[in-house]
Amino acid sequence: MIRIATDAAGRDRCFAVSSRAMNPTTNIAVRAARKAGGIVMRYFNRIDTLTIAEKQRNDYVSEVDRAAEAAIIETIRRAYPNHAILAEESGAHAGNSYQWIIDPLDGTTNYLHGLPQFSISIALQHKDELISAAVYDPVRDEMFTASRGQGALLNDRRLRVSEQKSLKGALIGTGIPFRDQRHLDAYLAMLKAMIEDTAGIRRPGSAALDFAWVAAGRMDGFWELGLSAWDFAAGALIVTEAGGAVSDIRGGGRHLESGNVIAGGIRVQQEMVRRLAPHLPEAMRY
Image 1 (cartoon, rainbow, N blue to C red):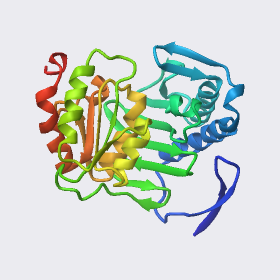
Image 2 (image 1 turned 120 degrees about the horizontal axis):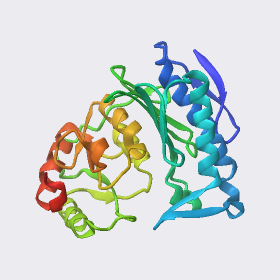
Image 3 (image 1 turned 45 degrees about the horizontal axis):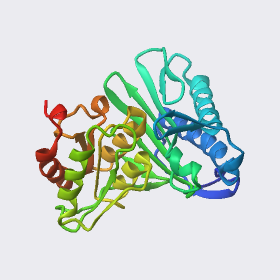
């Protein structure tokens, strides 16, 4: 079955529709992400007209971030008025045991420099379990989605992590510390350890897309320190539903809490944990 929909740039596109119905909450996440993507792309070619503020060192926000977030929240509130929300720009909104975790523009620094590598990230968590996710790349019109227990998709194609079995020859993504540099020396030691026998290290600049690319097999693994939950909650579910593994930097399950995360195909992820463990900052060892 084929349907026609308008992408973020206003173009009509044909999409194959899966015979398996999408989880209703994932469908809302997709709808909200597309709406935000339209706002983001509307201003991408006139960034010089935006008002930009620095929230903290090397952390910027513009009216595009805020407008995209408002559109996402409006879409969610129409469908689920009682759900809680945690959003990067407006913070926590009270609600029930369901919580949406939103990054309206992941990769704002890239966006403000005209670098076409950014995304919209939306996840739904019930108590301690991620259940729905969407990461949208409006430049390429790629929608990465996952519903717990139902697998992960890129548009209508099922995703699987790569079959890479070791770090030798693996392509690994990372995020270089740019706000909090207390652990910069430890990170550089980790980087050196990872460079030794991999095929290369990449730092594209949008953690949500990095996770989505791991799920798609475009990168074999990813690690970063000091992320916020909205940066990777959606991506974490997409990776696990694509057959991969996600953990904190010590190999445990506190990644959403700590913001220190490793993701990849199961064997690569496990080897990354072992490779990085000797270089953990003292504060992350416990």
